[in-house]
Amino acid sequence: MTENFTLLTLNLRHDADRWLERRPLIADVLAEHPADVIAFQEVALRIQQAHLIAADIESRIGKRTYEVHVQSKWGDQAWEGIAFLTKLPVVEVGAIDLPEGHRVAQRVRVLKDGVPVDVVNTHLHHLPEDDESIRAPQAKAILDWIAQLSGDGQARRWLITGDFNAQPHTETIQQIAGRYKSAYATLHGADPVTFPTPLVREGYPPFAIDYIFYDPQYVEAVGAGLVGTQPDPRDANLYPSDHFGITAEFLLR
Image 1 (tube, helix red, strand yellow):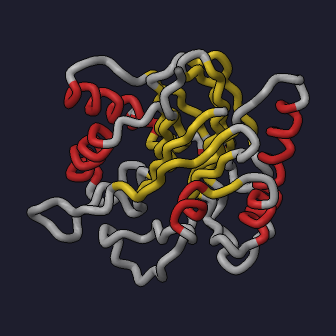
Image 2 (cartoon, helix red, strand yellow):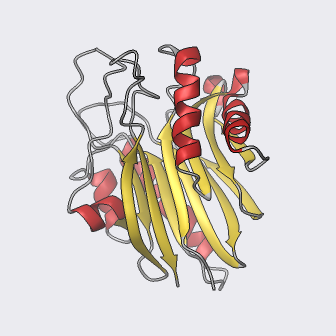
């Protein structure tokens, strides 16, 4: 019998804003929520940040657990990227460049007790702030990519996650929601505010911009919550990241 599949997404804020102090907090959170697959955004590639965090998690749980798959941005932004950590066997990997903004999407196909699951991770552009002229085409490119991959006749259980830099009412999110469901909103009635945390004090308004979407034809959301919501006990402004993470649990059909 297949156990439920767990996925977690977290924007790392690369190595800015007290990274060395945040690093153990991130590892603590991820060790406490040992997801099958973890998706990171804003990964600092120059310090192999995803690999460092994987090693930190493993030191806490006492065994080697996660395989790391990193995808850099394109062009002159290749110092940063996105990444997967997976403790499940990986049978396919892939990535695409998204239009404008040096952004990318990456994919892994993993096996959960022999059942294949396809997970897409992305970080859409944060600009322009007031319209979706870049983000909406980026989201469409991801949906087109998924549709192309789905045309191979195989049953594909799709999960799409990441930092979309777009709120639920926007064209960017609505086009995804036309085919896929948000795990958190399905179970709690609305998507959560994930940015900013008290780590950054720059006058940002609260935004719901991080998501885990799923294909309801093949996947059922049975759990969802926020992670990284507690500060360091010695410093009320020190959080794992400037984003809260989201975790979700799925029944695979």
